[in-house]
Structure formats: C-alpha cells, structure tokens
Amino acid sequence: MKHFLTLLETPADEIIEMLDLADQLKQETKQGIFRPYLKNKTIGLIFRKSSTRTRVSFEVGAVQLGAYPLHLDAATMQIGRGEPVQDTARVLSRYLDGIMIRTYEQEEVEGLAKFGSIPVINGLTDFAHPCQVMADLQTIRERKGKLAGLKMAFIGDGNNMCNSLMVGALKTGMAFSCACPQGYKPDPKVLQFAEAYDCFECVDDPMTAVKDADVILTDVWASMGEEGEAEKRRQVFEGTYQVNAALMAEAHPDAMVLHCLPAHRGEEITEEVFEAHADEIFEEAENRLHAQKAIMLTLMGD
Image 1: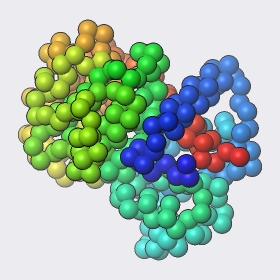
Image 2: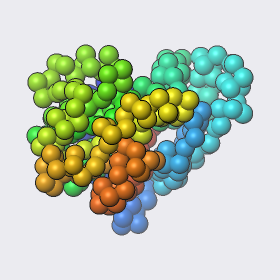
Image 3: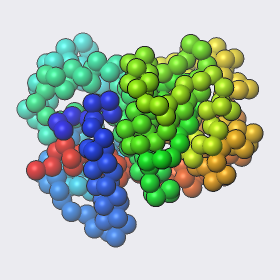
C-alpha cells in the first residue's frame, strides 16, 4: 500500500493488518516502549481545516516513532496562494518522507498522491475520514473482541464519517445501517459499493437503523465548511436524528456509542448518552494516536 486516501481502495486484509499493528503499538506505548521505527524520517502535516485530535495525534505519533513532524499551515504555503497541487507535490516529495493532509476537496489529496513520489495520508476531506474510522474499528474490536458479525448503526448526516464508516464496517465483516434524512444521504459512489452487501441498509428512520445494533455512531449536523447551513440543517435533523435514551432502547442492551468529536451535546447526542459512554468515546479519541502510528509505519517504514 503506497497511500492511504480512502477505505474504498484499501483491501480488507490490509485494514486488519493495520489494526493488529495499532494494537501492538498501543501495547508498547502503555509499557513505555518507543522504538524508532521511522528514525530520521520527516512527515509534513498540511492543514486547511482546524484540528485538535488530528494534529496532536499525528505530531505525537510521529515523534514516538522516531520521525520529525513538520506542521504546515496551508494558509502560509504557496498552495494557499494558488500554486498547483502537482507542483507542491513534486517539491514536497524532494524534502519529506510522507504527507498527511487535512483539507476540503478529495481531489487535492488525490492530486498530491498522483504527482508526488512519497506516501500521502488523508487526514480528513469532505468525502472521507479514514484515519478516524481506523480508530473507531480499533476501539470496537477492543471492547467487543471482534468486528465480524457485529452491527454498526450511524445516525445523522451522510457525511465523510458516514461514508468511511460504511466502507470500514462492511469490509471487516460488520453489518451496517445508517439513518439519514432525504437530501443528506451518503455519497452515491459509497452507496454503490455498499449495496453489494446483503447486510447493508440506508433508511430514513433512526429507530429502524439502530434495531439490535452493537455500536451506534453519530456526528455533528453541520461539519466544517457548512456553518452557513447550520440553521437549515437543524430544522431538518432536530427531534429525529439524535442519539438519545429512546434510541438506545432499540439497540442491543450493551451497545457502544462512539463519536468522532467535537460533540454538540443536545443536538446529535444528548448529554445523558454522551456521558454514559464517555469512556468509550475518549478511548476512541486516544486510539487516533495508535491507529495513525500504524498507518504511518505501514506507509513509511522500511
């Protein structure tokens, strides 16, 4: 595997191998063991979007692997002034050993991968959030002891999280159900992929989606770049697309709840449900570190 752009082109066996590696690296971290697997290597971290978990986990993870993380604010780079992505890719490839980019357009990530000669990691786009989903899968497997045979349900906007969760769940043997309002369904390309699986459904009713679910996930109603639609979206989602006690009653009795954060308590999830599952949610946040270390080591390791 040369790049990590979406889970669509990541084979299922490679997903599992990286999850196994993430577990190993997490265990080593807990034991205070930090091996310099990426000694003398540098990864550039490009940000067009605000970040807490992505930036901190990639920077700390790179250091723990022996690499040097170079924070690159796109607003202060020439790419932020209109330099073509292909030129940026070819220049950075002569300085760095890898690139992580957190941006808006999937095409920008694809362009860096196409024209560069070093591994590119998608830290988030409007289309996909594969790094987050690797941490989600790691957390589910830790808590449930397996992935295959479980049911995952997603409630809310059919956004980048829903797109990537759908692919990650189905490729690892999970059933997947999502409830999204009309006009806010997942990307057609991802739906086409998912419809080949008998254990997939995309519905309007959240109660139907969470029936007997083992893990429930949600995300904010208006993602970054959609702030201008916040009120419109609230009118569509409010009162129906919320993870609350009534919804949880339809799921499996020991169902997990995960959230990629930041969470808007009282909107997509209630304070009560969030706090009841806080241990799972913040373990999920921690696992961003371990899952991304596995991704960096898989792509950049010798």
